[in-house]
Image (cartoon, rainbow, N blue to C red; front, side):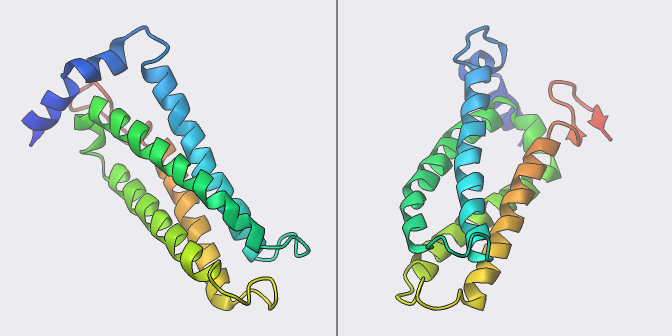
Length: 170
């Protein structure tokens, strides 16, 4: 398995991502990953907080129009995250924190899907108090996205150190 991961890391594409001086390599990919994360986690947080009672005079149903932006953000993150992972495969794919992050991300995406279909599909939305189920989904969503962002950031500080075989962060 490590041979396969090392081969991914040593591909021409991975080397370009990590070692190129081009602004379109690592800096832009990481920047786009940040933008995608802000789109997904940020917009989701707005919806979650509204469902939890923040700004009670703001109608909820119109927030459904933000879902396409979240799905675009997720697509951006899927592409850029895969690129960043492939470029540093032996480090990322041997770090347990990476897998915790992925659990949070895919759980968060599943919650987005459930909320879009069930919460926004409720004909009583904005006519009745927010259901306890919708509030529970909002809390779970917030936990997932805070967890994903936190674990993603911690990847730089826990587990194996990129490019230095055998060295670990504490």
